[in-house]
Length: 81
Image (cartoon, rainbow, N blue to C red; front, side, top):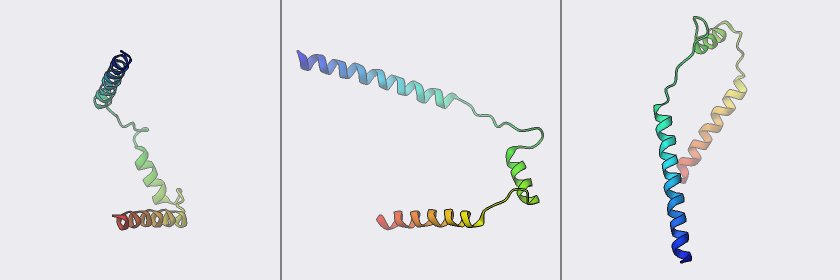
């Protein structure tokens, strides 16, 4: 009797969580994303203009460290295969 009760509880809980998961996935699939623009320029255009004009400073040392770290991670990953 206990085994029957436990299995029915598990089955009901699994069915409930599966239905909730399916509903969540369907809601995400139907959601649309819109790109907002600020005035007549998008954020990307503003950043591009700031970089071109020298107003946006890029730390080349930090950028090169990040690129090197990503490359090392990738090569370590490939060597593990």
